[in-house]
Length: 136
Image (cartoon, rainbow, N blue to C red; front, side):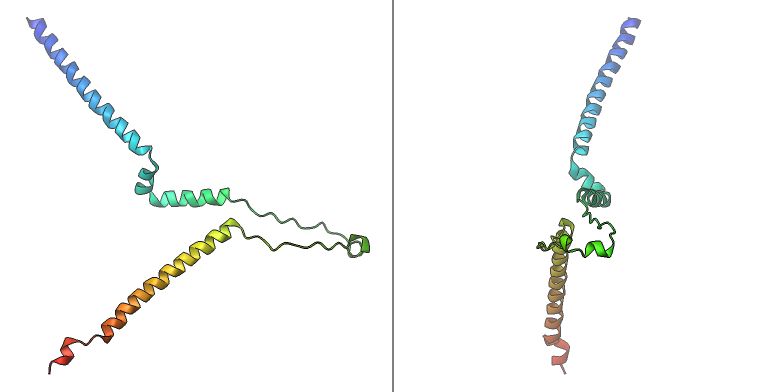
């Protein structure tokens, strides 16, 4: 009987460990599922995500390489055989410049809207008759 009590206690403890293990595994799976979503990082680490996005955008956008012509003597540059007129197309803006112009216009619109809204409130409050002035 002594062995059966010990055996029973061991079996009960093993059952408890199995139940705890199932709960722990479920918590780990849920945690991994949450951490696998990009929104988790944006909510918990917004500045790091913003910096990483800016750095990634900087690295992705190609640089414009402008090569300089090789140094040649002026007499060689002015020879009639080398004069060739080719029409140039207008310079194309970079994607970064277009994005900055877009963001700039959005910011300017937001600031002007904010200023107009609060100016309207201010002038409406100034134009409204105050109740203290009506009473003698």
